View (cartoon, rainbow, N blue to C red):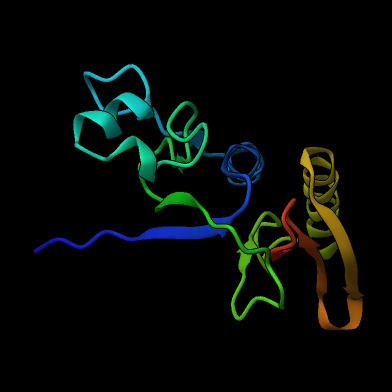
Length: 151
């Protein structure tokens, strides 16, 4: 049996997270299944009671997909409680090209990604610039406070 992976992220504002993470990952909002104009129409057709859908749920995508089909689907699940602590795991957005690329080039790529992600709604927490270790990375937070790194 084939297995696929979906990453589910609890959040308070799925549309905002869809917009941010689609930009961050180079993904696209997931279109509704064939034959359905919206996700709400799809959920209604599958029998999900209206009372179980949060206000506005299904009117806009709550998930993103890799347009190349390689990466996992990411679903932003609306929950009532806010994020309260540090992540126990995080994503590393690998934009630099790896250690075979000169450190100056990697640093410029990380800086460009950080600038793009701040414009999209992220917060820069800190830069780790350690040339003696061949390291230049950025620690960031998404619009709802989830930590991730740009390396």
